[in-house]
Length: 323
Image (cartoon, rainbow, N blue to C red; front, side, top):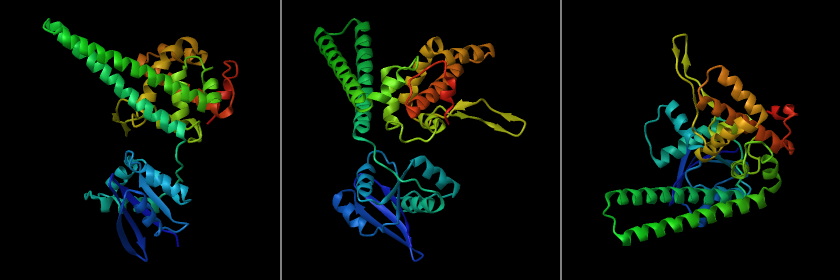
């Protein structure tokens, strides 16, 4: 009989919990190859291993198990947190978390995890590093400006800070070019198709290809919209409680920012988005709400273009009705 194995993983170790003959088994292994090999001795071919996407710590174990042809499921940590809350669990230990993950896996349908492609991982890492460099550039620039306002900044310090700024600008430019180079090579056809959508640029086309792993991770555009974090969240109860609606921001802030910027251009050059902008403006909708709606429309167009492997054509809108 197959079993569900829950794993709570950290930098150094991972806790394993599962039921065997109605008895709860708990073990701890090192988060390294030797520990992985010891753990595999407990696993049957039909068993499921369930874990959370805990930062970068789960990746090596999940990849090792997938390469060994075991059934691996990686869950969003928020799913387990919400599940734990519904069960009214108060204890928070590695042993308890592993048990909770195993309980969840036994009650819900599990989807097999597959590792991301090498270009996708490399671009994500470069993009994260790029965001940090941009923050450092902004902070250094603000610091230099604040020192100069005092009129007491020494020439030597001014020179040093300006050199730091120049170095950061060069690094940012280098990382951006590297991302474009990898993206164009890995997702050439998909990126070229997406770029034909008015309002969508190269950066957005590459990042949409990256987060979807060349559009293999999602079955419909609604899943992609939820992943990005543009799904509407309603707040209503009965006839008296009608709160203001918001978007669900549990997705990817970087790509959400890019799509929001794209909506500014799309409202001027994308026929469907232009019509949407005019219609919502006439209804008195705020500018931010309209742009979020346009961003959602762009996601739908991007998904349809990539899945159908077609180029954008404003006269064939039926193409963009894909689910």
